[in-house]
Amino acid sequence: MRSIEGISMAAAARAAAPLAALLLLLTIAAVPPPAEAHVQIGAYNKTCPQAEDIVLKEMTAILAKSPNLAGPVLRLFSVDCFVGGCEGSILLDSTASNTAEKDSPLNQGVGGYQVVDAIKAKLEAACPGVVSCADTLALAARDSVRLTKGPFIPLPTGRRDGNRSVAADVAPNSPPPGATIADIIALFANKFNLTAKDLAVLSGAHTIGRARCSTVSLRLYNLGGRNGASDPTLDGNYTATLRGQCKPGDNATLVDLDPPTPTTFDTDYYTLVAGNRGLLSTDAALLLDPATSAYVAAQANATSPDQFFADFAASFVAMSRLGVLTHHKGEIRQVCSKVNQPAPASTNAGAAAGRSYRTAGLALITTLAVALLI
Ligand code: HEM
Image (spheres, rainbow, N blue to C red):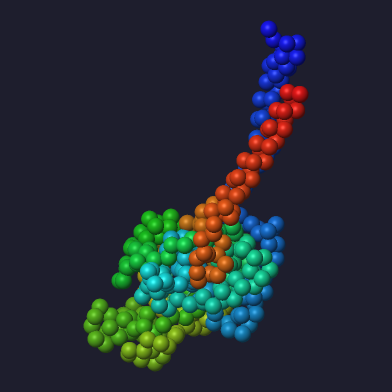
């Protein structure tokens, strides 16, 4: 026989069951899961509100001293994004057991690493362990454009850092030697989901910066392996000027991609390409496809840079979303050239967040269930 207390306890428990189920549902709904960290505008607004200001301030100081660093930083970001996504892998040093992307022969002319390291040091001092190297680079590249009189690009942030950086990954994600415009458009479409228009627009980044003589020497002295043969599609006067700047065998000298205004982000690049004075063979190749050549012609004849600026902002953001790592993937590197030392499992941030969420939820449910039954 059940005691009076037993009957009343059981009845109370039965009566409370639907209410408990409802409360359980409400509890689960009320305790938010850890936020999905997609890239978004102002991702650091709460965790490091000064982050974007710090990057801008540092970039302003760096470019005031060395205006030629805008080009390398902007290029560094594209090189990062095109190989394995915008996850800071280009910044990692090689180790005893791994040759990193930065040491691929294809990345020999890539620079600007010291700029990212300097900015990251300031960010770490202000907000330790919060802003990724991938975002530091992305924001610095964005500011390279702004500080050379290009558009301000509102840039989604929240990228985390990857720790795969393998030199052998570079070639399959770069235009092959002697690439035709069709090859490059196909590479953009198949690997990056970017259009021919994105290619024409992003190539407009060559409105600032420099290339090594070794990059252009084939067009000046050895086209198609023929000694002394220059590229007939390159304007003759420009060829002569370039031959004056780049002697045969000179691998060190740097030449401006946009000689009239090498540190100003403008539409001059398109005027040059349209006039057969695009420095790189891939710049000249834009004239060989109807979609890219139409874009070059439109910008060469534009009376204002507004359309190019709007297009560049859109294509830059599209590029900046390539292969981003968010949420529990990747890490926030402390030093951009090295992956973090593996932390003990108990300090893993994602696992800890998940655990604390579950623990809080369970504690609340238990409290409510006990309260209902007594
Ligand atoms: C098919 C696409 C691209 C190709 C084939 C390409 C190729 C090159 C090459 C060969 C150089 C000269 C490197 C050297 O001689 O050391 C260069 C420089 C540069 N590239 Fe590109 N690029 C491409 C896309 C981009 C994109 C998407 C951006 C940025 C949004 C960019 C920004 C730059 C800048 C700013 C420089 C000058 C770097 C400096 O001053 O050190 N490029 N690019």
